Image 1 (cartoon, rainbow, N blue to C red):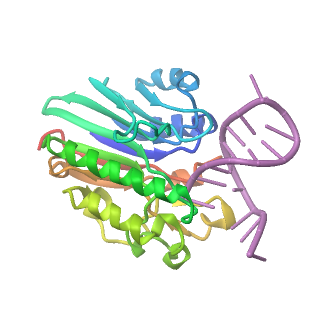
Image 2 (image 1 turned 180 degrees about the vertical axis):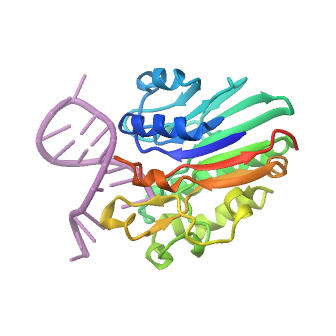
Length: 262
DNA sequence: ATGACAACTCGAAGTTGA
C-alpha cells in the first residue's frame, strides 16, 4: 500500500507531470495540495481513466486539496473543523475499508504564514491548533491514520540546506516548530525521520535564484503516522527526480509504503 | 534593499506563494 503526498502547485499547469508520475509510481492513495482549481474544473477524467477515484476540495485561484485513490473511499470529510468562518480549502480526509480494517488518510495544506508580523502568521498558528485538536480526537480511534501534506514547517535545522536563511520566516519560527512538535507529541511518527537521520532529504526547492541547481532545499512535506500506521511502515521515498522534469512543481512527491497487515 | 519564478485571475497588473 503506497500513500503519497505532493503539492502540485496548480493541477491545470501540472496535469502532464501528474499523469506521468501516477503511471510511474502507481500510488494507492495520492494526497494533492495546491490544486488551485474549483471542483467543477478539476481534470478528473484523465485521472479516472487511469483507474483512480477523485475527491476534491477546491476553491478559485489558490489553495485546494484532493485525494486520488485506486479504491473508492467509504467516507470523505472536507474542511478542518474548529472555525466556521475559515473558507480556505486546505483539508480533506477519507476513509478506506481494507482487508485489515479502516484506513484514514488526510491531505492537508497548512497555511504558509508569511509575513510573520501580519494576521497571516496568526492564522497559521490558529490553524495548527485546530489541527492538533482534530488529530487528538482522530488518534482516539486507535486506527491506522496518515496525516499527509504540505505542512509549511521546517521541523529541524537538518531539514534545510541553509537553516539560517529561514530564521525570520514563518516556516521556521519557534512558534511554528513548537506547534509542530506538540502535534507530533500526541503520538504521531514523522515517517521520513523514522527511516533516516540523513540531512539533505528535501521536498521543496524554490523556483527562484537557482535553488534547485544549488540544492538549496527544505523539507516541509510530511507524512505523520498514528501508532497503528507506524507499525506497518515499510519504507519512505522522496521522488526527487520529478523536480527536474519539464514545468515542475516546486515540491516533489513523498511516498510511504505501509504493510497490508500489522 | 530589491527582485528573482511561477500560477492564476472575467484578462492588466495584482495576489499568493515559501
